[in-house]
Length: 424
Image 1 (tube, rainbow, N blue to C red):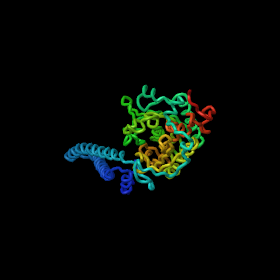
Image 2 (image 1 turned 135 degrees about the horizontal axis):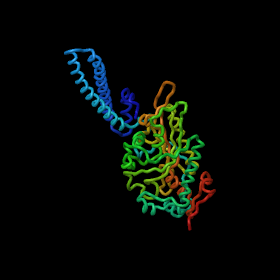
Image 3 (image 1 turned 30 degrees about the horizontal axis):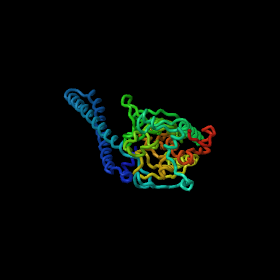
Image 4 (image 1 turned 45 degrees about the vertical axis):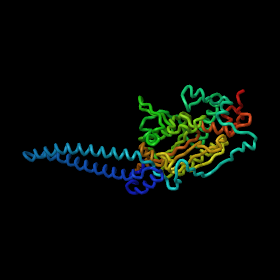
């Protein structure tokens, strides 16, 4: 959640953020009214409760009619206090429900627009000219089947649409990407983690994945647990309800986990192959830091993502994500889009978000510096989402005979192989 002081002292800033996100501006006025009702009801309760405590002493000293009058007042006060407590609780619940709907405040300088507004900051590398090389590039499905690396038919048979098997060299390629990502992240100072893929509702709610993103989440009703769509959820909740020593910050983690997404509303989009699937594995970076250091860490995470994609020798673009396409928790987000030759366009491969203090406030994660206790900032960044890098590796590094060149950075994790050859 945002800092309530900002809502009270600068509501126009919150209105501007809502407008930039294409979210209801009237929510701000509803929150202001709910906040006033909440505080007024708490004040009324405290006045009655103070009188109730005070009158108890008077009853002990009073006699006769005076005592009877005080006892009657005590009885009435008990009912009034109970009613005031209920009113305060109801007002607080209304305020909390509205506050849970309010997204993070968009950082100044984020470009305005929606999902279709792509603001390219940088283009790295140049796509191959396959026409000049004299052949039409195959897509990752044909290449994967030729290498006996991807089995879509049996994935659908076993689990349904948008599931797959990685087989043979396909499985080895994912493990190579995993190892490269974890080794690089460790070099950059991240602590490796393997978190649970099932989390409690509090973790999902705290990270902002039960609002606008709820339709994409798999829920196990019998167990009251959620399958994560990203290990960001478990990493963010790792220090929930904790007060961290400010001198220990930043804390940087990198996690490998399976991820599950319904991809609700995406039917008809990218239904072929492994680009948009219900399950994939991912390596995710996560940082806890001082709020004043968050912008700098955001640039660092983007730099790590760019370095990793460059190691895969894939042409890519860096995008500043438009305000209307930010998730609930993100105040600013950068995406990297890798080139997909069969589609002749760039597609998302990584992203990194600065969530400022938003998630920390929801998860009650704070830092202590001297006598002061205050929220930390959190950031996340995808280092490798496996399926999409595999697509781009196969397509960008293919050869006319269906073989695939292996970038030098991956070779130590593939037994030194320089080329993946089709299965005859």
